Length: 205
Image 1: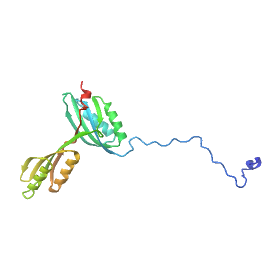
Image 2: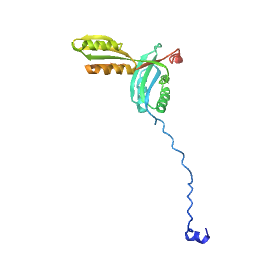
Image 3: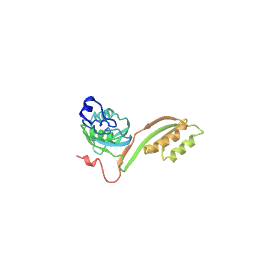
Image 4: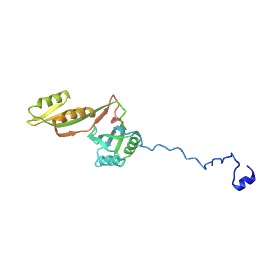
C-alpha cells in the first residue's frame, strides 16, 4: 500500500483489512461444580452422640440445597457414638463437597459415600391396609408373597411389616395401594458394607 493511500484512508482495489488481533484470549469456560446429573447417593456418618449434632448435619445439607430423602439415626456398639445413614439426590461433585464439609463439623468422626460400594441395604415399613371380608385373603397373600409379616388384623384393616431395599418396599406399597392405605411409616434406608471392612472400627477410640 502506498503512503498516499494510507493517508487518504483508501485501499487499492482487491485489498482487504487484516483482522484485528485481540489483546488477550479469554480462557475456555469451566464446568461449574455441581452442574452434573443428579443421582441417588447413600452417605454414612459416624458422629458423637451429643445434642445438636443431628441439627447441624441436616442444616448443612439444607444450606447446600440438598433435599434429604431419608435419614436414619441409631446407636452403635459404642454408647457415646451414633451412626447416621443419609440418602439424597445430587450430582457427584456437589455430594463430594458436602461430604467434605460434613467431615469438618464438630462431633462428626467419619463420613463415607457408600453409593458405589458393595453394601447390604434395608428399610422397614409398617403399612396399615384397608381390608374387608371379600379382599382380606388377597391382602394376606400379598403380604406373604412379599415376605412380610402381619402384625395386626381388625375387621377393616391389616397392619403389615415389610423389609427390603427401597425398591422392594416401593413395590409392595404399589401392590396394596389399590386396596387403600390407611397409614404408612418407613424407617428410611440403613446400610452396611459387605465383607470384613468396617467404618465403625476405623473410628473406635
